[in-house]
Length: 467
Image (tube, rainbow, N blue to C red; front, side):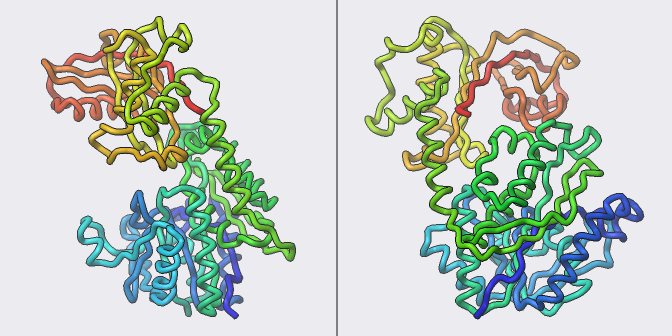
């Protein structure tokens, strides 16, 4: 009978390959040794199929992309390495079975090939998130077919269920398989790393790896969202799929190495299935339901009003009008307000006002929460059944003041650029946005040429979140 016989977490730093690192790879020698250990172990297993989940293939926001031609090819020329090329056959039978299972279970997925991707001006090819781990496999073993997929932002529970379907298909097709979750951990471990330093980076890596070593699936799914957002990582969604493929058994992770030499966390881990049965899915769903109840009863009056208003809108088809019971701060203050909606960590709607347009902050929140959900032109209208997966934040804008470029700080200040009637705004504290980028984005919004003369105003924001 077929089964998944090996479960692995592997990073994908191109610099680890000697032809790219040119000596720098020696600085992460422990990572290289651990990846070679996994390569040799996979060679001992001699799998029919290698299943790999990558963050760097073709990614769609609403469906997992499963590569589906006879062969998929790629090289590392983008890293000035032209001699490493891969041409790997695809397990199409596995793909079809998996896509069918996903359809029946309501898990968004799509089979992609060259013709399909041409519609998006995207090449059908291997990515470095796949090629770097396979570099260490192919040194020892290459008699396999591959199932190659790029995760999507469809939510942690759906990704976990997708992993469950992978295991089920392997068993049904009598495949001897292994599964690799390709992913780097925090990219914010050092100031000289690819992103600015965040104290959350090391905290995220430590908490996640500890949870995985202990086989604490629930803890891995319930880490602090602010910490996850700040960590700047690309491995967690791959790990969710990997954990789903182990549903039904207790697990333990064996950490083979962890290094953060270049400001990015590289964790190499293999997992052992324990004899004791353990079903996590029901517990994960229960935790999610409890978190939603917490959102409904959040103490902060600003975000509580935004959610209550949206619930009322979906129930009655109109906004809340009875506001006499609101707190004095909501009734007596007047400010511009932005309401932002995020789903699975990605923006789902954001509308706001620079200056107050209603008699109170409370009424401003009521107005803009509906605008963000229903009338943001960048997105389809939010539906009621999405609300369980949506996180709400409310930004209260202080009075803008004129300033010079040298006085800007994207972490602290939002900006408004204007030229005549054209006006563009960008909120503060956005991921890795510099002063230059902040100005360019605001100018683009206003249809202002970045090099022309325009006025700059800065403003501070008080941000309230449901967490």
